[in-house]
Each structure stands twice: as structure tokens, then as C-alpha cells.
Length: 280
Ligand code: SF4
Image (cartoon, rainbow, N blue to C red; front, side):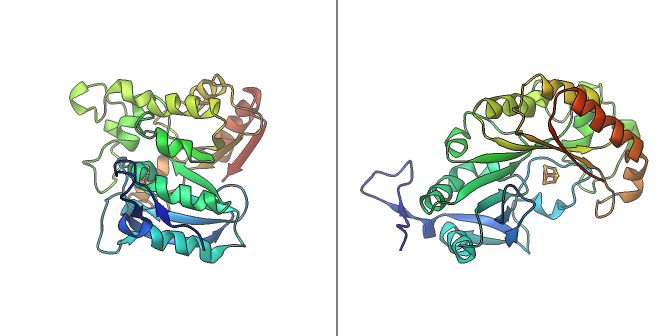
């Protein structure tokens, strides 16, 4: 029987906190998945994300709590994962954005790793690296979502007031600081975090949802190539699709053609990426 008693960082050592005392907002669990990292894995989707990507296919996970989500204990999640053993290699926690729950995920990952399971995060990468360091330390690999590069990200991913996820062509090139949703300096945060994670050999897959009009895909690939990812890192380029998005008609003009995608894949190879996967 695994030892489920863990010590919460802020608790004195004589006051252990069990996994049953910490809760997380759960969207859903997929017991077996082979598309969320290496091998067969249990995928846990948590509620809550600070972004608001126009192409988000799970916008119901953006709020931290909804009527459909449920608050569950870490012990519940642990048991759900252990029920899938021995048919899984590990667990991948996704969202929403899992790193917003960074403190609470640490004891869960520690308990799962004690059972020999690998722990992955599927993240957009816009987290505070230092504050998230304890979780990073117990995370085996990241599936790291690149969101883009430059000012187009303001309307593509950071316009939280746009709850309906509508595409406003006139807002794509935001130059007026009044309409900027996050500080310009923070737009580079996910590339900065990617660089740090690559140095720690914590990245299994870099994902890019390619959409025309909002950022320069080639410039982005050049910027990532300059970070010297190892040849084992997978680059997955996903053609944005509008089905299931909140504004399918608005997104339609920005879907790359097959030729656009092929050109970008060729460019990725020229930039030195060895393992390029495309999803059309
Ligand atoms: S990062 Fe974007 S795509 Fe992912 S859950 Fe958040 S809003 Fe949706």
C-alpha cells in the first residue's frame, strides 16, 4: 500500500497533510491516452486558464470553476491513476493551464513518482518560472505549447474580455498600449521559459498551433531553433481548425493552406528540427 501521507511545505513536519486534504477543480479524466506524451498515459484535465485563445476548443476549461466541474481531492486523482496501472507509463496533467495549480500538484506528482510513474505537464508556458520551480523539479517532461510571437498574441490569446472568443480583424495588430492585455515584456515569457526547460532537458514536445495573420511562423521557428533544442525534441505543427471553436466563421480566413503548412515544415527542417510532426 503506498504511503499517502505527504508533508505540505508550509506545514510543520509533525503535522502531515494527506492527499485527501488538498483539492483541485477537475474537468475530466481520460484513463488511457496515447496522444499526451510518450506511451500510454492517464490524462487529467483541470479547470482554469489565464489565457483566452481564439481557437481554444475547450473554452469551458478557462474558468476555474463551472457548474459541470467538480472539486476532487488529490487522493481521488491518485486512485484514478493507480486504477489504470499497469497499463500506463505515467500521467499527463493538462487544462486549462495546469501550472496555475502548481503548489497543489507537487504532492500528487511526488506520490505518483514514488510508484514509478512519470509525470508530464501540458502547458502554454506563460508561467512564473521561479514560483513554479518546485513543480518543475518533480515534472519529468513538458508538452510545451508555443502560442506565437509578437503583438498579435495580445488578441490571439490574451483578450480575456472577449469571452465569446470572437475574431475581430481590426484588433489583430494592437499597437495602442491602452488595448494591450498583458505587458509587452511578458509576451516573450513562454520562449524564455522554453529556453530554461530545454536546458533542464524537460521538454519532450514543442507544439505550435499554426494560424495565419497573428504572428510570423517562420520568425517563431527561427527563435526556437536559436534555443538549440536537442534532436530528440519533437516539433508538432498543428494546423488550426475552426470546428469546435467559438467563432468558426471568424477563424476561417486565418486557417493556413496545405501549401502554407508544407512550407513551414520545410522551413522547420532547414532550421534544424529533426523530428517534425504535422497535424492537418
Ligand atoms: S492556453 Fe489557450 S487553448 Fe489552452 S486552455 Fe487556455 S485558452 Fe484554451
